[in-house]
Length: 170
Ligand SMILES: C[S@@+](CC[C@H](N)C(=O)[O-])C[C@H]1O[C@@H](n2cnc3c(N)ncnc32)[C@H](O)[C@@H]1O
Image (cartoon, rainbow, N blue to C red; front, side):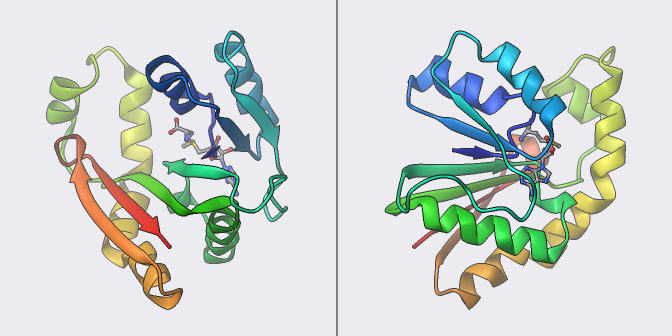
């Protein structure tokens, strides 16, 4: 399950590369409309779930829960609610995988490794999220959350230093 799936890119990759059953949630119906278009020919299921509401899945339904570029935008109460909900729907041997931009690097490196200089929206997004991303990496919120809840935690810097991958398991 991909929480905060936005336009559904993660679910598209999962379907094309792994062909697994997947579900996506988001709080924003316009984003889910975009995702619906993209995922029309896949088996992915999309769910509109307002912030703070319970996920509509049985306990232990998923092997993996992914959360990409979502948590670092949110307030602590919402982060904790989202994390607790994820852990509930995760199988005992499952993994919660969180990807967040680090806010590090620079435009030249970004365009060299990932995007054409013509893609202005990426640069706007990079600049707009840089500060929050730096705060997220400095605070180590997930590491602390894992310690407080007696969970296992691993972290790795990926994507040429542009993103941090954090993995939590029970
Ligand atoms: C920056 S976008 C990332 C979209 C997608 N995960 C990606 O990496 O392309 C953040 C998404 O999280 C959604 N979101 C914000 N708060 C949320 C919450 N509490 N639960 C689920 N989704 C949330 C937003 O509506 C938005 O679509």
